[in-house]
Length: 170
Image (cartoon, rainbow, N blue to C red; front, side):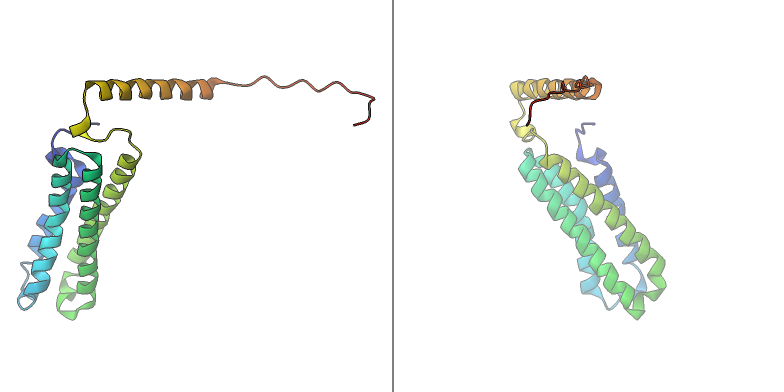
């Protein structure tokens, strides 16, 4: 499926939910004297969706990949801070919320890894470099690859007959 807007990307939608839930969590009284943790957690959570959006808007596959890896790094940063919070007594009452946030961040990370893997194998270098000739070559190659796969799937080689027996020494 081809997406025309980053807002339609499932991973961006998931990242926005992550950021939203982090903001709800950081409004808890446990963050009263933890402003640096609150700020860093919020900024890392927002960074996931922002980097997906920025990479998507850039126009080339290498730039998109760079920003997807940055977004994935931010998701890891969120998880790391949540792991710290799990160890601190002042956040014990948020255990369920923290667990849910970690799952959401892991989901973003998995989706980003899968997307980046697909992009690395793609012959298209990005929308900025996509013109009519490139698109038509890409479509032609896709059809040729599908034809070859069909041939291979339906090809059953004939069994070789047994070689004739010979009395000659080998």
